[in-house]
Amino acid sequence: MVNVQSELMLKAQALMKQKDDLEAEIKSQQDDLQSQKVGMHDKLVDSNGFPRSDVDIVVVRTARSNIIRLKNDLKALMRQIEEALHAVHAEALEEKQRQEAEKKKEQELAGAASVELPSASSATVTDEAAVERSLAPFAIVNAVAPGSPACEAGLMQGDRIVVFGTINTNTPSTLRTLTELVQSRENRPTVVKVQRGESTELVSLVLVPKQGWGGRGLLGCHIVPA
Image 1 (spheres, rainbow, N blue to C red):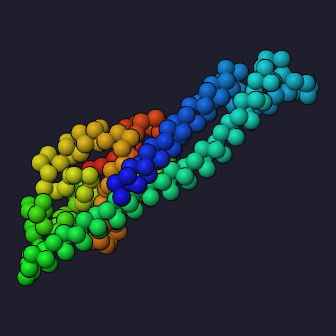
Image 2: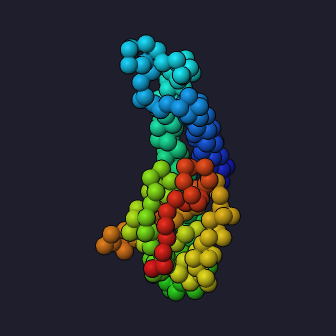
Image 3: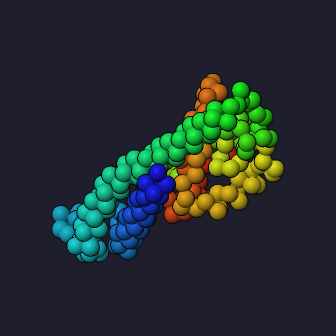
């Protein structure tokens, strides 16, 4: 299981690298257009219907064609990235369930009469899932930028964050610690669990903090204290 999950993570990271390369190519082609002082839809003929003498027609047409092709490739790649991240998340959940089943079996073999559900402070020796359900949200997603890592992970405005990697409401200096965690997890999948809408059930997401997505920060979302 560990090897499979590692391969899935590597695949997701490789796809993210391809995304970065495609975005860099698109930027290069857009720079070519800017060098000619035209955009994707500016006319290439003058008022008399003749090719404009102030632009390199070949450069402009080539750049426009490449931009259209590259953006289509990027759109298809984004779907692959989404599928890869879902696979990573599924493997992580499956591994967690396997570990919980093994732990339960060990407790039964040891003749444990009952298992007391713990408070959040004793989560390391008890049922982690039950502890997470008892936790209160520590932050709220105030805004999500389109195309950002947060958007790709499925975070939505109004989501109440209960768990972000190893951070929950019991973590000291929660938001400051969250900032440090995000920086340390750049380009690495991180499990985020949120409450959404009126429900208190946890929705699990996989977020990959990264730069170069077209906006500021590693997440592309605004988080405020709950």
